[in-house]
Image (cartoon, rainbow, N blue to C red; front, side):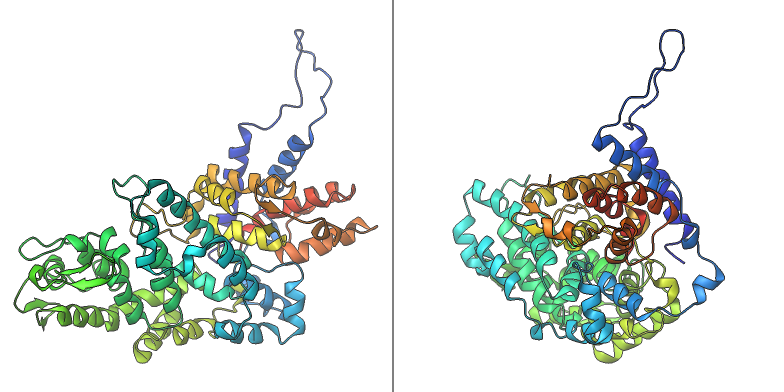
Length: 525
């Protein structure tokens, strides 16, 4: 099992090492080496100590065995927990029970695959009020932001907030999850250090390339990405012209976007594709434009085929890449890794790749091939993925039903965790495998965020008293059990339980919330 004993154990060790540097010393010695009286820990020191203790050891019950790998079959409730965490960013308070009562996981998934039928008015209203630029055309964005450095900086900071706000508030959870996937797959990044920053192209890229194509075809998204000013700038294809072509985009579109690294092409293919795509750029209004004067004339021989000159040749080449068997395999494996397991079963990947080829890259059909597979609902893939920083932060906000008046500080925290939105320095995009995020400093920031969130110390974010009161009970064990079921799906480890019981005896629901959100169990999805 991918997310079994080894990964969790490393996570516990890293967290303990991380907090070790500033854990409070509760025993001191005097001049005669006689112990001085223990001092009373502060509330924050005690919470840090208990969180560290809860992470110190791996739960024996979560160590994979033959029994857990092969069965038993997931219960109806576990299936709901699974899809809400794997096909979205986690449940809101009470959502698991609501889905169980109203058709179960199948009904929820069916609706999520047809997002137009989902009422998302609340999210849309908040987004339109806070981010009015989101409805502007790229020409309008240029008119409003070009030449105004301060406005561009504001837009650059607001784009991550826009992305995170949608992920937290939207009822179209699967759509938001897949936007996160494709945003990383077709990664663009324009850091604010550019001499002439054009952050408005990224804002338009989100709304014209990523969001409209999540439930379309892979070919259409690929071509939309290739034509957009954000990608043309990011990978320098706007500079590519006859007798002075640039190879950056040609190399990355084959290695990262379609075929995969070293899969059926050579350096000569990179050069020829660079020539094929010369002249692709944009005009003064940031609309795509093909400049025939910049295009390398004549036929090109690429991937064993003869490609005609002109714009049509570029479309033909990208269509060939979109329909290539190696692309089907590469995308299928990447999607299976994202939705099923860090090391997806080869047989599943083959089946999904076959659906990709037969459907012409129809993405909803590809998604369904994964979701409806026996592997997706297998016991060994339940809670087998490790949350990225983005997934962790969004899931914590959703789990607590937090009111999000501003996402600015949360986005700043994501920078500390190592995953700033729309600011990945590598065209690969952010990775979603556990090993990419097993860093002590990053994990420390996670439980600090959990603590700050529960005590109301995240600017722009409020966890209401009604959230805490829903768990209060005269019987601590009832409070504990309900919180475990709702926040981590009903399966806590021994050390987590021990830390929880000590705090539950005092009825301290905020502290219990911090412990659970900072625990290894909550990092799983």
